[in-house]
Amino acid sequence: MLHNLVDPSEQPAKTLVEAARAKLQMDILTGTLAPESKLRVEHLKSRYGIGSSTLREALTLLVTDGLVTSEGQRGFRVAPVSLADFQAITEMRILLETKALHQSIEQGDDDWEGRIVAAFHRLSKLDPYVKDVDSDQLGEWEKRNDAFHASLLSACDNPWLFRFYGTLLRQSSRYLRLSIHDHTVPRDVHKEHRMIMEATLNRDAEAACKLTEDHIRRTVSVVSLLCEDGAGPDASDAKVAR
Amino acid sequence: MLHNLVDPSEQPAKTLVEAARAKLQMDILTGTLAPESKLRVEHLKSRYGIGSSTLREALTLLVTDGLVTSEGQRGFRVAPVSLADFQAITEMRILLETKALHQSIEQGDDDWEGRIVAAFHRLSKLDPYVKDVDSDQLGEWEKRNDAFHASLLSACDNPWLFRFYGTLLRQSSRYLRLSIHDHTVPRDVHKEHRMIMEATLNRDAEAACKLTEDHIRRTVSVVSLLCEDGAGPDASDAKVAR
DNA sequence: GTCAACATTTTTCTCGAAATTAATCTGCTT
DNA sequence: AAGCAGATTAATTTCGAGAAAAATGTTGAC
Image (cartoon, rainbow over all chains, first blue to last red; front, side, top):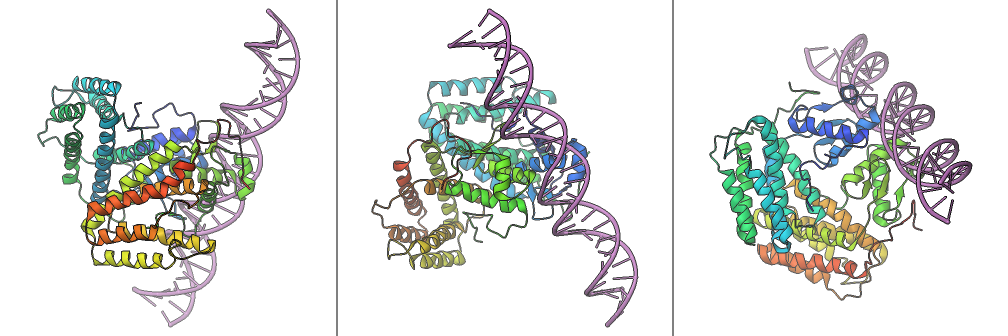
């Protein structure tokens, strides 16, 4: 079974709460709602065109996901960002992804191998490091990249691992979007992917996990360098970028 | 710093939502609200004496925690239980606890060692396997047991690890309470604890982690044996035990 | 007897207003 | 001027009623 790890709420949204949650999540992930900015119910009500209880419920969903904080009797805020937090997220990502990869390599069958090869092929077709792609295709590349990584783990059947991993991916995605990451660091991501795939298909768990760890750390090091420590203590309220 | 891992919502509860969430959580953990039973808003409103929106928000908090499920346009339910789910939870517990222990052993200072020794001492004072304790004291023993395990991990500073670990502990606690676990399996838990502590203080990470893994598996094996596969497909609604 | 379409009941979801609490301002005293 | 008490404003939280949807029950045709 293939999970959608980046956005579990990508399905049609049968209720207003789910729709609001998706919009809010996107606005926080992209930085439209800046870290630590106050989320005033009255303001957001008009912004998203929903009632207060509905909005409140959507915010509550994001609280347990760690994108929003809520303190006692003084409302909601966008979760703060910090380098330490990002490093903690990365450590956990590595822990969970290598665990899932280990288990997949132990348990994976032929279908699993097929899914990996297929996802790798689709990704290769528009790898930005292989051939030029415009920014329209970049979103598509990210999707296929996520799908490739998901395929590697898809023989692991621990739902709790995927639940937590999804949360971490969303957090990670926020840091990636918040930082202006130039691609000056020369990387051959395509080669990294290929090597991970080969080690995986050879059932060499140790090598595959080591490669995966390096892969994640490299993806993430760009942020670590550029991310100055978060906004000042008075990151004032309702700040909306652009 | 020492986290309270079992119940992060043990503080006074400054809002009705938090209070309701705490009550609901307790009722689900103890089985008063049976697995898969429907959580009808109208019914629970009178049970907890709060309005619908407030109740709804409390339920939403439990959704992301995995104690409640909510499907599209057809309400809330108590999360189902299954042997497979419990095994998955246990695997994740082991993964996270050994990771945290590893990190603690690497980074722990003298204060950390002091906390461990202190927590062990307090626990030893009323270990039910050492001397008889009445059921009143059993709750206290559980608290001290949790505190001991928390002390072992308290030099790990990854907030995400503790967030996830807390969720897993709550889930695990539910399975433990739901099953009637007799203590026929002869165990010397006190000795297990002592050995974990000794290996930890000797900074022998491999041994400490292995002992911890065995410790968790033993604690949990009782449930695995007794837990028949969950209630039938028609675990009807609003079932309230006792 | 089976099935489908319609009507009724039940339940979930949504909204805006009222109550409660925190934050801000004003004026007074030291 | 600084600090404090009370009053005013603003924000959060809570409630219950109304709208929307699902579940249930009924009737009628084949």
